[in-house]
Length: 346
Image (cartoon, helix red, strand yellow):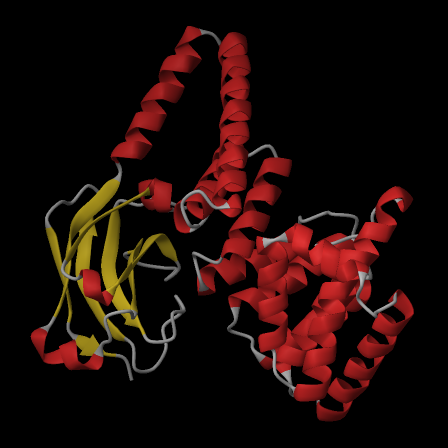
């Protein structure tokens, strides 16, 4: 969530940040197409020096930017159902450091696309900024919902990791940020920053562990070690395949979610792994390293149902037309499971 910088950096902030938002807002306001925003933001991220140079000669002042934003807001209030426009308006306010206005715009977008992980994360981000950076409570609930929809949503993983780190749960922070490092392009700035966060979280976790051990003594160390080993051993593994009769209904790049959930009670995944149809048949191992939430992994159950679902939308939440296969209830620790995706969801 962008915020207004110190006065010493205000000129650069207006030059670069306002330039990017102004071009995107103007393009969307007058063409109704979001492509301009994606192109400008990508170019700015790839070459900040070039964007800074362009900004220096850009015709936009902060007053003109505010006028563009006001025009976009008026247009959206008249149309009402443009989720992309409301998202853009929220990001424009975010760049200006107007967190409350950004939150209101993002909430309008969320109402229009309630099953979108990014919409949940945007509201959470703006809400936390409006509260002085505090993520506990509703912002964290929104992020958890986003990760239910898409376990690999980068912004949601980043926010969840930050919330865990702030709460002193360094293991969870390392898990969330580690997932980002795995998903991001190797060597990218995103991957590097995520790995740096993982390293720091692991360092903090090690210091906390050492402090606890020194306080509780050797017996506590042995107990913690045994508990860690037991959690690591709690897993299920096997192979996922696609029934020949359904191959024509799946595209090679369709997303495959492989998951484990409790045999009874909540249907929320305890662990989830993302693959693609072109990788099938594929071997898998699900354990607490792939848990959706700290303390709610496979090791918390004695029996689980293991499944795989081909998602045409790319969302983790089941949708009509998805293809799925489920096991019967199996004991945690089961190996060699054979999961065949063999039916369509109504």
